Length: 443
Image 1 (tube, rainbow, N blue to C red):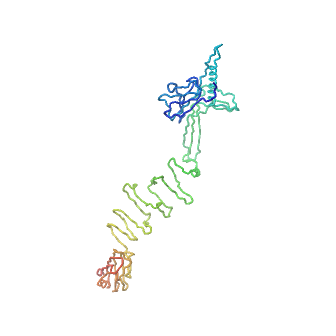
Image 2: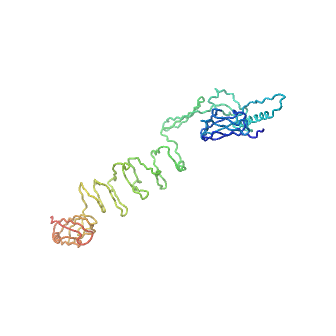
Image 3: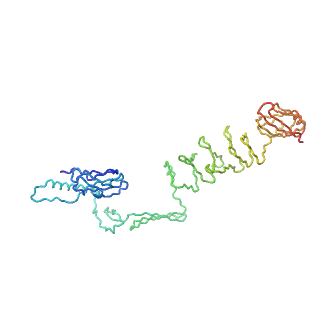
């Protein structure tokens, strides 16, 4: 026969179930094939043993045969199967003188020589070689095992093969302090016998390293920190009036773990607002426990709560404590009882013409300079109050149609003296809707 194929190996990937793997080259003996199992992830190889791990069929067949793995040794999907021909380097053909020429036996011997040549060529193909245009005086070295321990193969100044130091088995780095203002130092040492490479650095006390370029971060679309960001004495600032946005991922929160959080630019006004139509909620202990929210001014300032447009200011609580004065410049609607532990006082408006604007307040002082007509403007249903009424000289007092007051009362307060007038608005408009009564002259 002729040998037309140059194949000397086959490779497969296991699957945990396939036991039979074909080879497509001729072998003369079942020992003429090497079976290797390689762990695909690491490249670790193990040569398997015939009979123990596998059996070979197809010996002597031109088309090859099969390698069948035994039970418990089936290659897994994490393994690669290598079937490599390794023809025995022996010549077992013996010619007997004067016998007929053994053509078949002779051809087998020639085939075996060809297979041996192919196997050797396969080995040469995996060897490190000089190119055909290259040259070297000798590829041999005579250094003994003891002398080449922990050494490496290299090339000398003439490009010849040599055994030299340089094998690195371990690398260590140590650092020591250098006095403030001193120059940094760096040394390196190598121990040939152990292959240890050691770096020693001297760093000036207080040194923080070279200042990096802002371009280092500008070119990174999503920079990440491997640890805490320590600003030391610096700030996070922007240019060109840009905003600083803290945007957590998903449902993440922004936590400011500080006793005091300041906002605002120097003496300019500061605003806390939501980024949409949602509500702004302040709570303590993450809303899970009791606590106190305190709004305090810095130096006798004003705390103003001003709803937008026709909005209202609502306080929903079982108890509201005011430890000081409460000044309400608009209407106040209370849906429950009010208990005042201290004094409750309003402001008194002086109005000497007898026309009392109830939008200004509830309590008035009036000193007549002549006759007048008791008149109330801008009344609110349910509003009531008091008037210190001083008639300065028997001035005649009349009443507007909206005022319900007796003739006897008008006559009485038309005499010189000081009187206490009380009023109550039963409606916001209409005749006889503001009820007025008066005390006797007090002075």
